[in-house]
Length: 358
Ligand code: XIL
Image 1 (cartoon, rainbow, N blue to C red):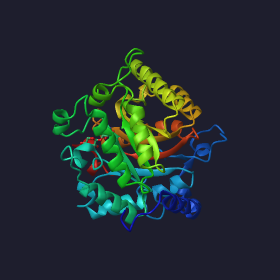
Image 2: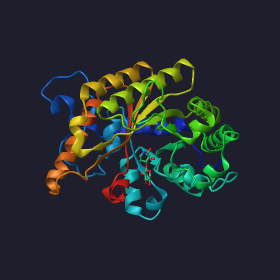
Image 3: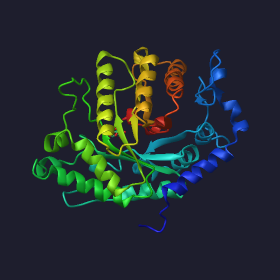
Image 4: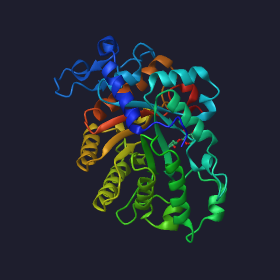
């Protein structure tokens, strides 16, 4: 382990200190509490609600402090490619965020040039960056059906699939053990339109190992890094198209099964790639129920990849900004009612550096 290694507990102490030192009163003008944001009085009015208009980033009152003063961790995704080249972006990210999620640099495509090879150059740079800037680090992602290098398809099979997956998890999770706040252990295992008979999203890991690949991945991650929070991350949960409902049910069934089997899982990541023109498909009551079911399973909730796709919104910039701010407001005001929500991560911090602009 490098001599800059810091334990998760030390990092959490740092983040607790920022709660204590957060200039809550000086931040007041940038915040609307629930009782200010709505006419209803609400005993949960100590949670952050995003203002309905855009707020300029402000070093006096960073987003991380605003979140911490309400008991939340705020972070964003960032990547080696842009953070290493753009010091302004790097500075503002560290100023605003208590947590960094490497957007691509911990994926197989980045880490695994070959069956017996690992390349930690970019992931180490990101871990160093988080450490130097006193940010928590969140690993994304150990097992996913996507972002697999070509050799995986050619050299992995039913014979060696489990060994290859477990070796990857052990090696990577062990390397960053003690430095990871949390790991997305498995990403997107449930199909977009799951059925009771077959809830699984097609994945080579499913083909090679069977449905148990999820549980096996969590066990391996826990052995390699017993301190990190282990998260199941999933997409398509924010809206309520008919298939969205089936997806929530299937995800809850998976989580229940994992908990019943004693699998070391600590939380759920709800990706939350909102679509600005489809916000009428977000149904607050259904989301509240889903969040409560997750909380009843004693799992933490992360909003793990929040952003708003605006491609179908009107061209007028002011109107577009208003609708985007409204989408965040509508979504987060429901999400933040749930005390099990601990962490909010936006998928990037700047429109200049988002996967939506590619
Ligand atoms: C995306 C990145 O943002 C892009 O830069 C990359 O080209 C593809 O992957 N759900 C996930 C993330 O879990 O890993 C994806 O990130 C976005 C959707």
